Structures are given as C-alpha cells and as structure tokens.
Image (cartoon, rainbow, N blue to C red):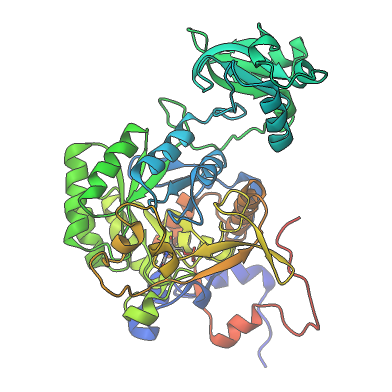
Length: 523
Ligand code: IMP
C-alpha cells in the first residue's frame, strides 16, 4: 500500500483531474445516454458556503421586460388563481395569472381588483345608502360582523360620502324602521385619496376612531382604513409593482379563439400587465396568429406563450414575438395528457432544452407543472428556467378560490385540471377556456386530459411563499451561489455540477426505516 499524500497538497492534487466531480448539465441531459429526466432523476452537487442564506438574491425575469423579486407564479386555473391569490402573490414578490374559465367581464373585474389594491386599504368596502333602515343595518352586522358602515348617496363605492353608521349609532335604537340618514354620524373622519398607509394609520391613532374613510377631491368615497386592521398591515418589501403606477402587477390568461381578442381588450382596459396565451400545445397556427395580433394591436404588451417542450415549438413562438415561454406538457399533478395523448416530455429535459434555446434570444422561461417541493423549484431554475408556475402547490391555500370541506377528518379544497370534465362543464362561461385550451370546442365527445380532486388545507400563502423563499435561499447557499443569475451562469459554464439519481438513490434520499414519522414542512 502506498503512503497517503501530504494533506496540504489536496487542493493542488485536485487540479490534476481533467474535470470537476459530477456531471455538467450538458452531460446530465445528454438524452442519447438515458432518455428524458424528471426533477427526481438528478441532484445538484454542493458548492462552497461562505455567505449567509439571507444574502441570496432570488431576483429574476418573468418576461423580457418584467422582473420579479421571486420566481413564484400561480397558474391560471379556476381552483388556483382569482383576484385574492393574484393580490397575495404580487405582494409576496411573485405574480398570479387569473384564469379565464369565466366571462371576460368577470375576469376583467378580477384584474381591476388586483390593480386597484392598496396594501391595508379596503378598496371595496360594504356601503349603505341613506334610506337603508336601522333594522337592515342590524341584520348586516349580525351577518358580517362589522362595526362601521359608510353611507353614500348611491349606496355604492365610489359614491358621494354622506356619513358613517357605527355600532354606537344604532345600539340603543328600538325603532328598526328608522332610516340611517337620521342616525348616522354626519362628519366622519376622512383622509384624501393618495395618502400613504402610514399617514392613514397615524390619523387613526390621533383621532382614536375606528374607521378612516378615504375620499377623492369631490368627496366621493374611494376606500377605507380600519383600526382593527392596523396591527395586521404587513410590510411587503418584495412586492411586484409597476415602476410607473406603483400598482401590483397582474397577469391573466386568454385562449386562442377569435373571441379571446375581445377578452384581451377588456383585460388591457382593466390594467393587465402580462398575458399568458393558454394552450396545452402552444405550437399552433391559432397561437401564432394570436401573438401576431396582440403585437400589432398592443405593441409593447408582454406575452407569455406556450406550452412548449421542444426547441422546435419554442422557435415558432419566439419568432412570432413571444416575450416569455411556458414549459410543460403532461407533467401537472392533475394531468393525464401523457397517458391519453402519448404526447409530452419529462419536465427536467423539457425545461433544459427549451431554456437553453430560448435564453439565446433573451426570452425568459417559466417551468410549469410538476413542482412538488422546494427541491423541484431550484432544479427547474438550475436547468435554465427563470420562474416556476405552480398549481397544486398553491391549491388548498386560504387565497385559492373555493370553500373548504371535510372528508375523512381532513380539511380539503377542490383542485382540478382545466382539461377535466368538471372544468369544461363549468356553467356560465363564455368561450369555454377549458375546451379551447385542448382544441376541443367542436368535439361531440370531450376527451378529458385532466382529473378533478382535492388537496389538503395548506393555510395562507402569506406563510407558504416565505417558506418557499427561505428554502430556495438555503438551497442556493448549499450550492454555493449568492443569486439565481450567478447560478445560471455557472450551470452554463460547467462550474455547477449534477449527479444522476438511480431508482435506489431516490429511495436513499427519502425518509426510510422509520416505524412512523410526521412530515411538517414549516412551523
Ligand atoms: P401542478 O403545479 O403540477 O399542479 O400543475 C399545474 C399545471 O398543469 C398548470 O399550470 C397547467 O399547465 C397544467 N394543467 C392544468 N390543467 C390541466 C389538465 O387538465 N391537464 C393537463 N395539464 C393541466
């Protein structure tokens, strides 16, 4: 046996190897060797940790012109993204795409709600008219439980502010038929539209009132601040906002049918920042024509096109003018496309190939579907994606549409594919989003490409997104990178190394040999 080398020569000796340990991304993804890979099929090798995880920047690009502070995007699905999700996603540094399985009017009003949102301000307060009776106010109080109702001339917001009715105004009144105009406080404390949250809160503190009514220059009520919310108003330093209007960024989806042009017009008028042209197979003349029309009609408006999984599909959409691409076919958690259509691609390979091509043209890519944990997110980003779109991960949160229900002792919310029979049969939708996503609008028998199911209650994304954010920062720290930009650069030049994971390696990487355990993801 030869004597071991002097330990001080370890670094020098490292240089005698022709390449770094592990595989470059090109070697990992060489499809001639082992076929398509999913996120679970590989790992990223660790780097040097010489910085705190809090120093990691997750800044990234959604499209050519739109940057975000986090790579998190919520999917345009009717059990994932409506106004509440889109508002919270934007506040937390990501963006939500509002689904289009509804009328254009409904979708545009959701977009408007996001654009009008001001942190801490109640933009759609419940308002009463001067003729509302004391009895009606008492009933509303029992139903909704609030203590102050603004009174406007038309009973709406906006509307000329006439007064405020609080619990104290009606508490000891026995005549329920009295009109509120006779009992309301006629000169409530007001703030002028445009004041900051801090200024509004200061007025509330000074005046010791419960409600601050915000009015415009013509004394029209536009929003309201509530003392009860004062402590709850959080700061959102990562919020995704328009540089010019300071409003939250909002995305939405449309289909590729003629009627979708009118839909987009309504969305643009509502203030939309970016559109996803929603199709399970993006490489179609319908989508190419739609992109061209959008570019001609709304020059400078940002378009995310897709879905694609190959360079050839991507090339067509980039040539037509796409500002971002959405990657994934058949990998969503509610999806049966690969089974039914025999079409699709393992997501790791799809993300790598499309991103490698699109990034040459400065077109950022979104890895869409199949994300089940933080590890999957960092892998998608390491393979070249700039953002990740999530459906199942965000379904079942407080901010997702739908009511909770109980089954087998668990609190659940519905989550369904947009190609499921349930989504397609949704009543009241015009130009059904689901059928057009799957080119099925003329089918006599609908061929489903998705399932409907339920997911467990995940709590609020106010906790879940920060969990993902911290987790990603820690992951970048393990890989030895202080930003996603640097990580991508070093993946490209072969500095960041990967390892293929055999089936048994995947088992080894999971929890094993325990009698029982509880998996809690965060406190
Ligand atoms: P998840 O994050 O794995 O749940 O996947 C969500 C993604 O699945 C969406 O963003 C869509 O791209 C895709 N998707 C949505 N509905 C369907 C469907 O019915 N069939 C196939 N894919 C779907």
